[in-house]
Amino acid sequence: MSKVINLAQWKQQKESKQNADDPVFGFLIWLHCPTCQTIEYTEVRIQSGRVHKCGTLVEEVEVPIDIRAEYTISQKNLMILEKAFAENSGLKSKFKKLLGENKLIGEQLKKNEMEYQHRLALMTLKKIDPYPEDWDAKKNGIEFVTVQPSGIMITAARQADKYFPKKK
Image 1 (cartoon, rainbow, N blue to C red):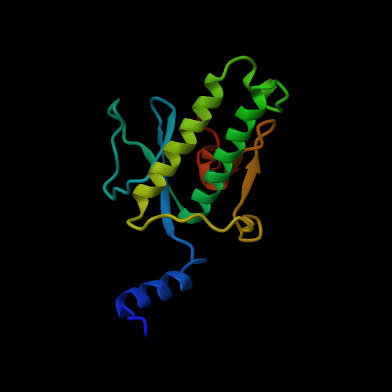
Image 2 (cartoon, helix red, strand yellow):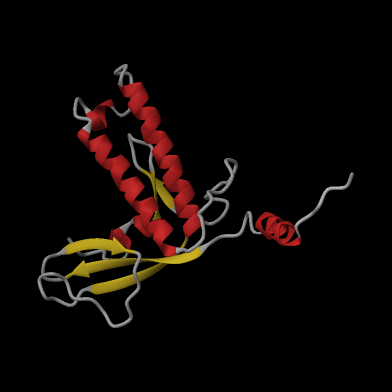
């Protein structure tokens, strides 16, 4: 007996295999209010400019990013944080100095990563699949710094001081 093949399903599988290693491009927009001296980021592009809640026109810098790379690194950061929480329960963690007895900082780091992933998802209509485990950010041209003692990675796109060096 032969198997019935759905042509549309076959095409979709073939295209998804071809696009498995393709980057998904987007923009992260950094905003700086000269009056309040606040810096924040958004995923929403507005061509006409923005006004901060204080009424000042904000400075904007659009940073092109590979959404898949940012998502992959954020996933790795969440795994690092989860591992640290597991180790911290035995008080042998390298996070002990960072977190001390207060888990609120660690929980906030986790929330920040989850929020960042949510915003990355808003940038694209596609489902974001992280790169494979063996994917190397440095080999693929992604600049990042590793924050010590936590070990989490912060990409160049997430470093506001690169775009507004004398602010805040």
